[in-house]
Image (cartoon, rainbow, N blue to C red):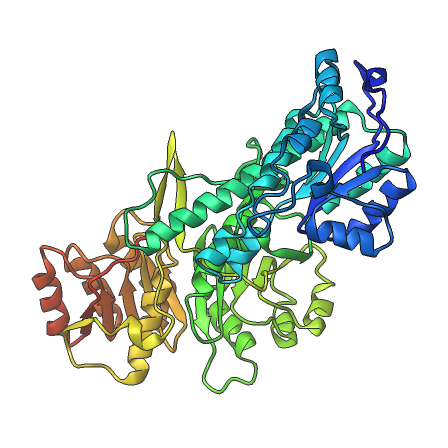
Length: 535
């Protein structure tokens, strides 16, 4: 039953609003009973719904069911319970206006000064792998309506959408009421909350369209929440911040275990390192500097510590450039890997997990940043890039999970079919090439890079750079090119250095010249039929 009518004219044009009646309906029950106790101790009438009301009542606190207030039982399997004038009138009434107060009195509606609502777990349901109607049923209707109504009426009502805000609202209850500044801040969080929710729903429907093979979405909404303001952006005169995208499971959601604050460039390099290491099926490590690989390697055969082996082999590719690099491992960082890194200056290490003994070793390097990926880490299905006045959207460039599928459609255009081991090296080089900025050339041996040529404005210069960095290790290695060779001069640089096989997309008008050069040298060459530009 509703409590006695209060004289709200006492609060007209006042900053502080005393809480006498609260509407509480939450899917996230974290600290719900802590809040309920504070409300009960302050003799605040609690009005609630469904499982929220049951939890509060079971804990021994008085609670009024919404159905008692509206006079209408929940219906349609709970789809309709708060969509009623006696709820929304109580939330939306502007008690600074005498006419609003008069109308409430005539209708027998008692106003709320506090609304505590968080929404159905739509994002969590999608993340769990649910589909179809199971997801649709987690689209909240009444919740967002109450949140937005309370946020609009923040002059009179405090809206709380997260347990993180409970301490502040409990302090306000105990301190005599909420202030206008507090209510306005809560309203801003509330609108951001519903915007993020709507974005998640819209994105799910859009992805459903993509799954059906239709065109890319006609409308795209991207919502992100600021996690931290960075010291600066790419350069010291630029502002910078890191945002978490709704539904994201990547580098932005990683947990920093130790070290200095991450910088803008640290995040960019860490993301590039993930791109390189997680393309590999075997234990692998990538070392990145300025968004390009200094080295990528998988473990040596029969290595006692596969991830430590992969790191040492990646480091050997270019030890000079690896100084101050960012490292990504696709497996748990072990004590042995940590010990190998003791005397190597490294900015960031990102991995799915770290052995406790490894963490102890890293404590001596206090500035070293350690990032642990979320358990549900996954590579994105779509790539988004901002351009002036808009953005670009594309399917993420991905490889099949099994190594055999990577090369099943390759065309052998020169030389003999290589051995299984050399084929594994070609596939490794082809995968590694995707992580290198175009024009990209990778030389590899024993599933480790030995020379990388990147970012040149012509492919022959990238070939020369890769060979120069490889030195004597070029002899007997294999080569991969992210796009076709426009002339035979690039492959000739590689052939002269002693490579034994080349994998490239093909498709140049001078393919015949390029293939003839390979055949003349007795070098194996494959056409993949696809390229892997990375700009």
